[in-house]
Image (cartoon, rainbow, N blue to C red; front, side, top):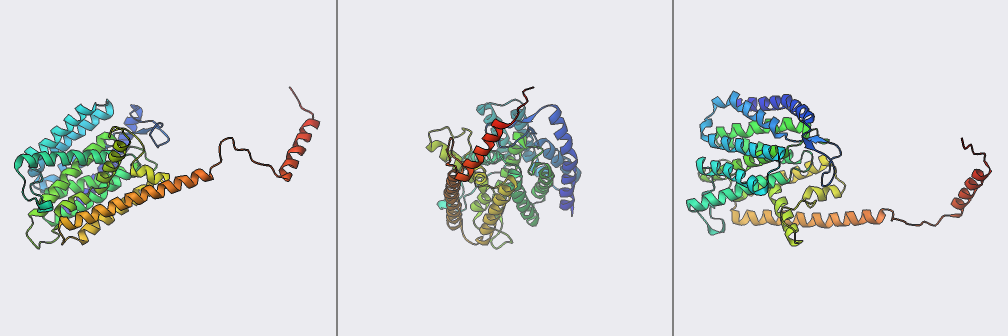
Length: 385
C-alpha cells in the first residue's frame, strides 16, 4: 500500500511542478531550438529532469521513513551529484573530460562507498567471483556505459521515458517481492515522477529531459540494475523469481540503450568518424525514415524491449551461456532487418519523388488548355494602375 501511495505522490507532485518548470524555462529561454540534427519544429524547454527529480525526492521525504533508506543513502547521493553534472551541462556545456570526471565521481560514490557492484559473473564464460579492484573497475565501466547509453536515446518525444517506465516497473515489483523495500520505494518514486513527466513529454513534447534528466535517470536505472543483478544472484536456489541468467537479466533491462549505443559507435568508427560524432544513425532515426511518428516509435521500441524482457523470464531456468547468445542473436537480427527495410523504404520513396528539373511531356488536351489560357490573356484588358 505504501509503495502505491508513493507512486501516486510522485505522480501528483511531478504533474503539479512540471508546468511551473516549463514556464520558468520559457521565460529564461532555456531549451532546444529547431534546426540542424533537431527533429522538433519549435522551441522546446529542456532540463525536465528538474521536475521529476524534485518529485522523486519529495516522495522519498514523505514515505521514506517507512523503509530502511540509510542502506541506499550513497545511491541517493550519487543520483544527486549526477543531477548537478547534467544541470551544469545543460546550462553551460561541459567539455567531454570534465563531464566524464563528474560522472565518474558519482559512479565511485555508488560503487565504492555504497558497495553496489558486480561481484561475480556467476559462471558466465567460466568466470565466478572477481577480485575487489576488478569488481570496482568493471562496475564503474558498466555504470558509465549505461548512463551515457540512456543519455543517447533521449532524442525523440517520449522514447527515453517509455524505456524507463518499463524497466522501473519491473525492477520495483521485483524488489518489492524480494523484500528489498528501499530499492522498491526508490524505483516506484522514480516511476511515478516519470509517468507525470511523460504527460508533458509525449508527442508533441512541451518539455525535454535534457542532460539534467537523461543522465540522472540513466544513472539511477543503471545502479538499480546492478543492485538487481547481485541481489538476484544471492537468492537461494529455487527461490521465487530467481533468474538463473543473472548477467543477461540485467542486460535485457537496458537492452535498447545498450544496443543503440553499440550500433551508432560501430557505424561511426567504420566510417572513420569519432564515436561521439553527432549524426542521425540512431535506431529511432531509422524508424522515423520508415514513416513512423514519434509516439509510434516510442511504443514500438517499448513493445520490443518488453518482449525481450519476457523472453529472458521465460528462459529463467537456463544459464547466461545459453540465454545471452539467444538474446544477442535476436537483437542483432532485428537490427540487420531494420537496416534492410529502411534502405528499401527510402529508395522506394526516392523513386516516387519528382526529379529536379524534370520535364514532363504534355498531352494534347493539356496543350490545348494552355493555348486557350494564353489567348484569353492576350485578348483581355489589363489594368496597369
